[in-house]
Amino acid sequence: MKDVSVALLALSDVAELAAAATALSSAGLRTMVSGSCREALRQLSSGQPQVVLCDKHLPDGDWKDLISWLADCPEPPRVIVLAGAEPEFYAEAINLGAYDVLLRPLNSEELCRVASIACGVIRHPPERATAVAAGSYGLPMAAASEI
Image (tube, rainbow, N blue to C red; front, side):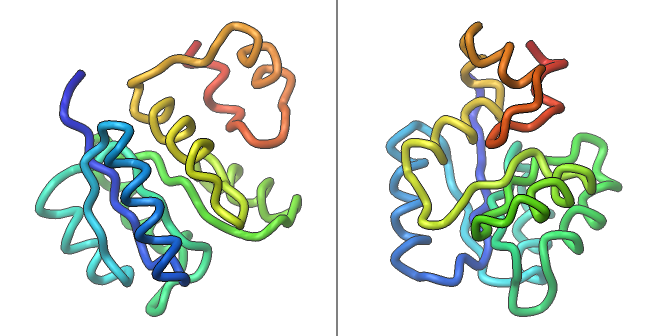
């Protein structure tokens, strides 16, 4: 497995940020932490992660700003947005380029599973592949083509 970085960006709850970093580290993923769009861009320029976990709203921008800035990368990282339970937001995020949306409260097991799949560390189990192709809530439509 190649070294994987995950940038954790401006999660509004400091305890949630610490829990996410701990969970991802326990799953074997290296983490980088930033608290704003500007700091995230600086972190991203020093090392290209495969995944960015991004809060819906950041102090100096939002997830859409990061996706648009990352679009110019030769291999842009997959962006996972952390938000509340808003089905219309999920559709918007996926349509604008997010890899997936995770809901609050953050479930560490789900975070590790989605981040690992996004990084290519693990593949979708066959029974989930059908659900992804059918457009189930909670997994990105783009993942169906990667199976």
